[in-house]
Amino acid sequence: LQTPGNVHSAPGDADGEGMIRALNQLARRRGEIAVHVADSVVVLHGWTGSYHQKQLAQEAVKSKIGSRELINEIEVRR
Image (cartoon, rainbow, N blue to C red; front, side, top):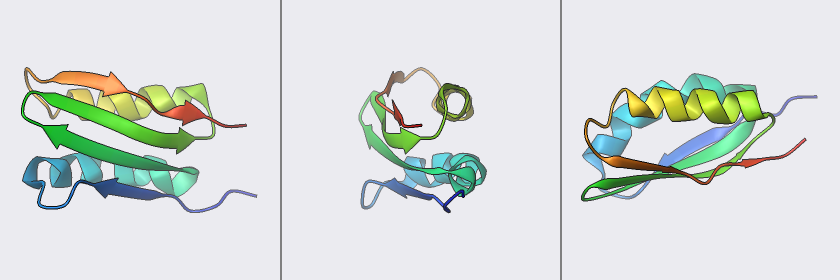
């Protein structure tokens, strides 16, 4: 059974809204992902059901963040 997921961003984070749109389809499959943007760093938090989904989330955000550093702290839960 797969449960619907949720994607969240930090309050008042306009850049995070674009990333949320890119991640919503992944999160619907299974998991919960949070995107936090602070100055030159973007951090992904939460969990997914597979390593592949973790990588897809990372790649979806990478294309939206320009020169910012990306830290992927998404946990894989099986």
